[in-house]
Length: 153
Length: 144
Image (cartoon, rainbow over all chains, first blue to last red; front, top):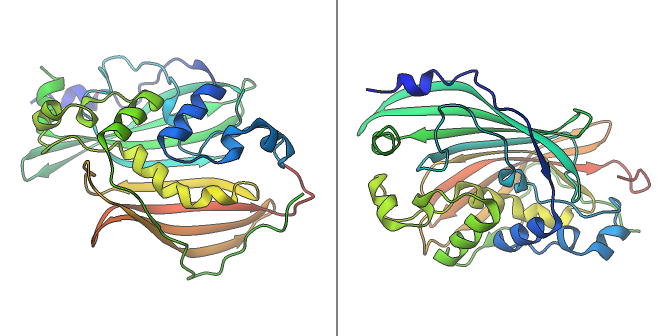
């Protein structure tokens, strides 16, 4: 059993990474989720709105680079997504420079029918360039025995 | 410029949305747009190795669907908080129905915060559920 490998990650944090909320990336993302809201896409409409500028969709922060956590491995190899939370302090705008980082906040395990299930809880944060928080995400990743077999190999 | 923002009453149902079947192309597009190239969303063999019958939709794509009924109100407010629990995998070909109801209304300094219970269903089965907190700004002249 190599579950210790995961447990040891709790408390680990990445270095903050600068990200730009790019207009083209927002357009592509809005298209992929099938939401053609003009406040995401149309500069003229956005200019006349209360915001005066384009916004990013609420689930867009998934696209940012939050930096690497040592020994987490490639987070894109087969993790199942159990839960997602996001909390905004204010809306996110196109053209903003933001600083992002991630932290492993908790580890849990549960005996499932097919073996031990490992739950990793991570927090991902986006701040403005002055360090004021814009959003906080919390995600629960589930590692099934099959997935751990692939990743731990 | 615009009329007053929306107002809901507790217990009220939101207008549901019946979505077209999930396609493989949609998952490829979402992978490209989000940068999430987890192979369990794209390659059947990798999904099978992870113990699944075939590729599954990205959880965050389902989350985006759960947020979609609130998009038309963006001029008057925004999603301040969202919580989603992904309870069942979503497969290619699944037809999801997005629905919800108002579970709370609260007056804050910044506006009215409405809480919604939302769910994505495949037939009778719930595949994802959670809450959305939508803040309607206090007054139209209190800009941005």
